[in-house]
Amino acid sequence: MTAHFLLDGEPIPFVPGQTIKEAAKAAGKYIPHLCWHPDFTAHGSCKLCTVKVGGRFTTSCTAQAAEGQVVENHTPELKEKRKTLLQLLFVEGNHFCPSCEKSGNCGLQATAYEMGMLTPHFDHFYPDRPVDASHPDVLLDFNRCIMCELCVRASRDVDGKSVFALSGRGVTSHLVVNSESGRLADTDFAVTDRAADVCPVGVILKKRVGFAVPIGSREYDARPISDVAAHAHAPAHAPADTAQTKERN
Ligand code: SF4
Ligand code: FES
Image (cartoon, rainbow, N blue to C red; front, top):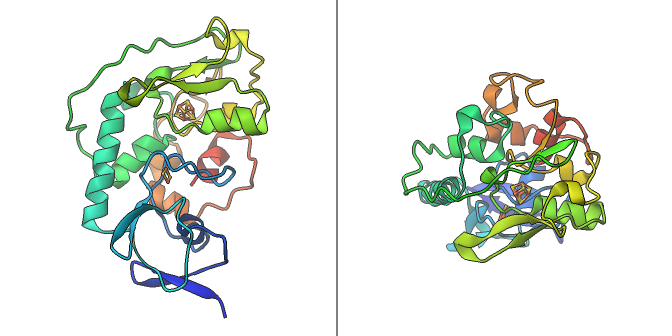
């Protein structure tokens, strides 16, 4: 007999070793997330995937599914907390969605819409984050980084290069490039690297293809992220921009 837990009252099957997030995704249920990606081990840093298990808050991307668990996901309380986390991310970076090259394909923007975020609420920090356009094929716009470390993990664990790292603590945390000069051009980063395709927001951008798909015709322009996530069955390593969006849901 298959083991089950209850997600918002609905039985969700799981196999031993699966997390709540993985089992929910396999069942076509959307749990908001930013640092989780199906190709990488869970990181547990963004906290967007927080659910309540037996009345206690826990990150569903790291919590193992267990028989008989009672898990709350879509509740007004959790939606409000997730919205606050998103608002903090928006003010800690510099996010100007209408002019962003990733608008409509951005996990942060789409999740904010999903959570009903209408304003950033908090005062902006406006951190000083210069862009790095030194690389011939890739632009880095650090202003939009949400510190999910997907690029860090992809470059280190898949590409074997460790091009990226986080530096600083707390609100001073920021993404850095591992080269003496700090410039991407002075690393062995390549546009074909896994790390070039993994950013959920608009930091790691391929040059000369920016608006190939116009804003208004992109993944989350057409459907909310919860709907995209529920129907996402993309292959494990999809190179195209649209497939990347599906893959991380
Ligand atoms: S650059 Fe993108 S993938 Fe890397 S940590 Fe920032 S948001 Fe995450
Ligand atoms: S998705 Fe679980 S903590 Fe980020």
